[in-house]
Image (tube, rainbow, N blue to C red; front, side, top):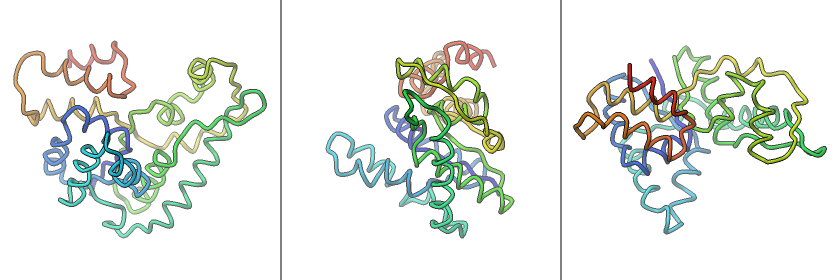
Length: 224
C-alpha cells in the first residue's frame, strides 16, 4: 500500500490551473490512495464553498471526494481524534521556533501539520507515503531548518530570531510539490495537451500559483 497525502495548497494550485483531473489517472497508475485530512477539506471545500469567488474550485475538489479519488483517513481506519491530537502537538512545536520582538511567530497552519500527523499514522501502519505541500516553510522544517531565520526575516521584513533547535522530528517526512506531481503526470502522458512547450508551461503555471520551485529547478526538470 502506498499513499499520497495532499495539503490544501496542492489542491488549490491544481484546481486553479485546470489540472485536478490528473489525480484520478495518477491514482490508478500508482495503485495507492490519495488522502486528505479534515483540516484540508475544511480549507478547500467546507469554507470556500460558501464564498462566491471560490465556490467553483471547492465544488471541483468536492467532486473528487465524492468519486473516491480523494479519500479521508478513516478509509484506512485512522481515527480523526488521533490526527487532531498529533496536529496540535506539531503546531505547538513548530510555532515555538521563531521570535520577533519577543513574540512567537506562527509559521505553519493546522492543515499542513495535519498532513504530517497523518503521515505518522500511515507510517505506523506500514503504509509508504509522501506529503504534497507547496508552501516552503513546512518543507524547510524537515530539509533545511537553518534557513528559517533568514527566510522569515525576509518575508516579514523584520528581524526574526531562531530560538529553538529541536528539528529532528521533522527529518523523517518526505515531501513533493505540485510541480513534481505535474512533472510525473507529464512523463506518464497523463496531460491532455500536446506540444514541445507543455512541460515548461506546466511548471511555470504551478510556480505562479504557489509552488515554491525556483527557476533553476524548473530548468533542471525540463532537461530530465
